[in-house]
Image (tube, rainbow, N blue to C red; front, top):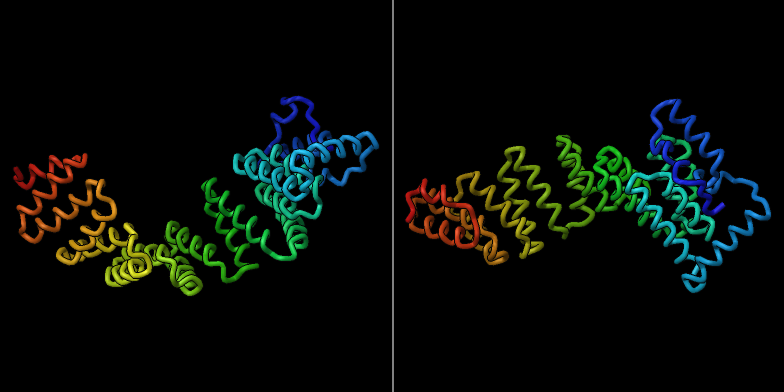
Length: 323
């Protein structure tokens, strides 16, 4: 059935992610009472009355979207993804079931079923629905969209292991997907797995050589591993790819200052100021370069400019005896 609600209390004990036998039994009992908690309503044989309710719901949704079946199914699935992100698996399942009911050939519902079962730890069931989703998307365009959506939700939920698994799934079908390799590189770096991080950064640069952010990410990886020469080279490449990247200029200036190359850092900091003239702390970094080069008047001048822009730099100014 499309939308059976026996009162909110019916769902209060539903376990979004069953962790033991008791949780499983609770969910099984609720699913037996409420078929819309199961994918495709559990293949329930419906009565004529239930079929009439389904048809009424379908007609109402199609009327709302001017007879566009795909749009109606897509909108119900969109609501499913919202509740999946909120980790409310019962409501997410209702919405994906509605999407499936409207159009059984539109793959979003199958991806939704797969994502929920994967979240709940039912890997075999999840693979079943992933395969159904792939089968219903001959062009692979929606497959790429929804696999990325699942991975993005995992990232938003701060489920690092889950998102890594999701991006591996992307690569299993789209082996040259630079977004997946870039994300894997970044999160392996966060997890302090340098070999894996470097592997996926290199693949991303191979697949998308003009994307500046990957050079910045790889440069940060090198910088953290005290390889400032390689870091500076990657930041330079990022600047070549995007001459307006404040991150690239800032990171290169930071690496140059770390390497005591203060004179070379000055042009980068000046470029940062041109790109973002309101940010006060570029001036404090520039002042530090001048102080290190014994150009104290210029250093004090930059601190004063930074203070005028709202920077909390008075203590540094006193430290250098600036007027």
